[in-house]
Length: 69
Image 1 (cartoon, one colour):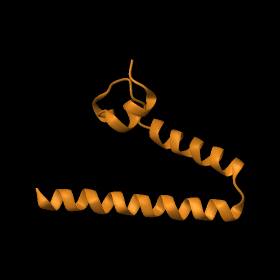
Image 2: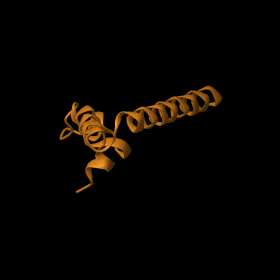
Image 3: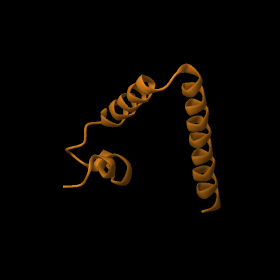
């Protein structure tokens, strides 16, 4: 059986009949709560900024790949 990570990020979740469509948002929320429990406000601001930049960069890469096809 594939790992949860593989099912959420590597597989085609929408075609998997065993995949809960809310699983990804639940996992992200759980991760955010776990991080927040261990970090102070200053650290949370830095983590949020880094993850926002990561998301923006990944979106830019995906858009460029799509454009170049």
